[in-house]
Amino acid sequence: MGYRSLAECVADLRKNDRLVVIEEEVDPYLEVGAIQRRVYQAGGPALLFRRVKGTAFPMAGNLFGTIERARFLFRDTLDSVARLVEMKVDPSAAMKRPWRFRGVPFTGLHLLPKRVHRGPILAHQTTISKLPALTSWPKDGGPFVTLPLVYTEDPDRPGLARSNLGMYRVQLSGNEYETDREVGLHYQIHRGIGVHHAAAIRRGEPLRVNVVVGGPPAMMVAAVMPLPEGLPEFAFAGALGGRRVAMVAPEGRLAMPAEADFVISGYIDPNVRKPEGPFGDHLGYYSLAHDFPVLKVERVYHREGAIWPFTTVGRPPQEDTTFGELIHDLTGPIIPTVIHGLHAVHAVDAAGVHPLLLAIASERYVPYAEVRRPQEILTVANAVLGQGQLSLAKYLLIVAREDDPDLDIHDVGAFLRHLLERIDWRSDLHFQTRTTIDTLDYSGHGLNQGSKVVMAAAGPKRRDLPREIPSELRLPDGFRDPQLVMPGVLAVSGPKYALEATRIDAFTSSFGPNDPIRAFPLIVIVDDAEFTARTLNNFVWVVFTRSNPAADVHGIDSFIHDKHWGCSGPLVIDARIKPHHAPPLEDDPEVEKRVDRLAAPGGPLHGII
Image (tube, rainbow, N blue to C red; front, top):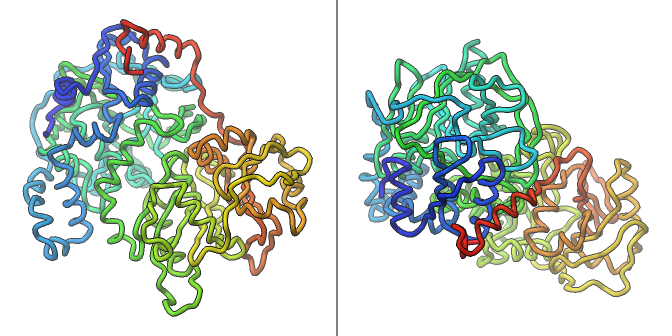
């Protein structure tokens, strides 16, 4: 079903018992976000808040709270759009399998956005301070737009064909922003808007920007899709939404979707930056305040009956997990056509997406070899680290499909066991130092700065993984509470992190050649071993968000040979919280009590959370 507007989408969800209306007044400061997160965790419905403190506009959340609901929203177009993306990557595919692509011509009719002279978005104007002031976490620097669709055009070649629509963070007030006149615009490394901003700076001119909020939900998905070169986001939104996106350009300004709910229109001054943040982000920590571009606000448009869509992010999984699943629905089958030899890739959401990437590839370079070892999969790994957002992966774990053709890349535990049974720490670790990492990842040595490691495994099993902790295991002073995370993985509580490297050296150098700890191929030093080992999600979140490979990967019996680092004993990852890390997110107990009251008998959330 192609929704013309967000209101149509909300009405359809309500009609099909997939949305709950909350009539009680709620506070956009912490309470609304806490409600949404609790309902998401319970697998609950979409939410419409009719009375929001401090604003006249209703708010809609948890629209994409389950993958089943997201597929329901696009139930008439998902299959045909997947075929369209596949054919865009490989135009010859339609000739080889015409029946598979029979619906693509009809989908293609919706690709081209259409220009209109008027639209609902032009009905009214307001100010920033009258918009819903959503603040999700106690230490956030102010209210944020959490589902912003930021639209820019290439200053060198303006127009829709080379435009960019991205979901970049927008801070509405706080810090040093001038009330109603400035908002903060945070975009991460390797984003499309960066190319446009760089061109504007080179030309010495402002960059025109429209921050779109609301409108057909297909636009929200389009803004986060890793689209092939030459396929604008608004074109994809038309295909996914089942209708061409109508665009209007009032008074010669930058074009905007005619059916949007809100548009904040303005420009980025190339010479102005101000602190943006902190913000509770999707890694489960606060991204701290840093200087980012400032959007000078000229006008704020809204349609009649406008609805403010929102989400909240935090330690995964959260609602943005659904976007990742939906992206996989649409792009998963085309991965082998993009990187030759790559069969599957999975950015582990529980680890914050970019910190941990799993991959399965072919290993065929020397088919007559008596023992297979990583060769072709290293070539594939280098290609993966050269692909768009995949280039931000911090830990890339890659295995050969030939060793287990049935291995499920989304079964993180099974994948880790497969790798740990086969990997040789002496030869199968490959580091990139002093390189780029995710802007939101504070485990590195600076903003956007850190390291990467490829862990590659191919060939037969070389070890059995221990399934219990030996009673005779002993730890050096200061290290305690060994916990079995999973077969082959041991978590150990370490002393509070100190800058002196000798503290971790005291651990790695304290074991003899026959010490029982050597049976474990992977040991992680953490602040709380019991918490880390409690669930697999805890393990991947703690270990891969709190470590920087070049600085925090150690080993028992380590060595350097011809600039290659390895170890003949267990690998040791120091995943303790470091002084330069951002603080983790914590709920406000008083706000949680207010949410509990909404869930009490007679409350609007009773039986939902």
